[in-house]
Image (cartoon, rainbow, N blue to C red; front, side):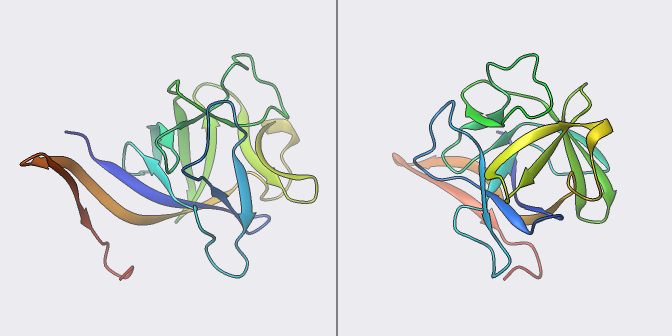
Length: 165
């Protein structure tokens, strides 16, 4: 049974959070919502590993669809992040406590969002990054344990991290 770890992802530059919904579908753009007044609904992402200083992970939204660059196998700066059924490996690098850069494994493309243009999350070439636009504050949510089946009824055990109660 595998562990999953939930996080919120807030852009350091804009204050916007990556959100997902139960209605997200494959090939739909990954979007953000204003978080300056508090954490918006749907601001929960699930990682398959707990984050360290450098961690390779897959990242899922609320309905289990995975974030990916999808059909854009040769993505370039400006390519949108999409929800997909196909797994993608993301390298998450800590730059300071709770602040990370997220890149497709082996590429120099960083997750960014710019609310003045649109709410989408896209990738941007490392040489074009300005200020903190590629920085994301990743905060722990509930740690979800394995799924159990008891007399035909499925349930998951959750542990709340200290300070989040």
